[in-house]
Figure (cartoon, rainbow, N blue to C red):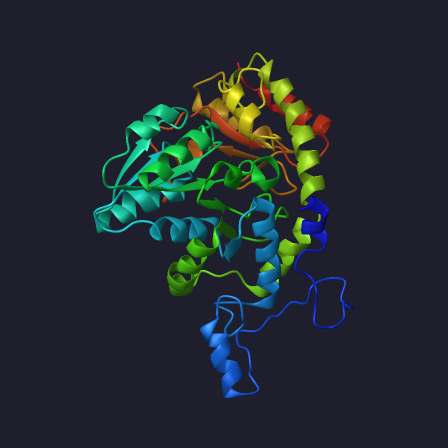
Length: 387
């Protein structure tokens, strides 16, 4: 389907003869029925007939249809956060006694779920170097039920050969989940390569305005229905109709935003890769990226995420660098209009991260919609702090 049809029209026919240019917001918890028979029918088909907004809601359904089309899957579910979508996806595929193979250093809440919570319920796991597809497959056991991928991976953007992994997994009866937040559905299509469940922190590119926290899960009809009946309805981590409407609004500009962010990021990356005070640049489309063949195979664009290691191990200098930045704001998220810097040093003793072995000179950058020249000037000024 044409991308413009998805972003501007899909799912937006209304019962009002098309008089509303923007989909209505069904900001209601409950739906009323004229007869018992109508109510009974709705409850029997609660996944697609509105009965109670924890299940189906017309505004959310518009968004679901668009997201599924973007990821080229049969269905999608929308959640109140990325971690909620990831939690529902993973828990839907495992039980006590099962084993998960997961890429190393995934999104922190993914690791906390697998390593900290599911382990209490006798679900075993191995975390494997994210750039080593053969090692991922080698860690599969007889009781492995799930392979969890991030491609590109968090912070350092290692990639996996998705097609090789899914081909193997299907032969073994193992499900695969891939977090596609980094690439976005515009720049990578995991379903084409056999991934069973695709998840996003849609707080990022899909929402894109730093005003919505949300997550999405995209999959086939059978997996969708199972998750809807169980994890989705039971956990109740739904998005509100208003937030769904805000995401629909955001999707109108998704392609334009991604083009601008990608152009800016390439220019910033070229500057950083040659700068003498940068020890290392992690960026999928840099000249030094270690897996260009996987970039060529899977990614049709680059997005705005990159990570730098400053050429210093002096924590005070790292702090000065961060505090000198003006255009890049200090913050943990990404994917919005604003450029952001997330210093890894902040995770060393925090409540939820607590990573004492973190590289103190590592900073994740998100390049937003501002003029790239202004962003480069900002980095130039801050890098003067480094001896």
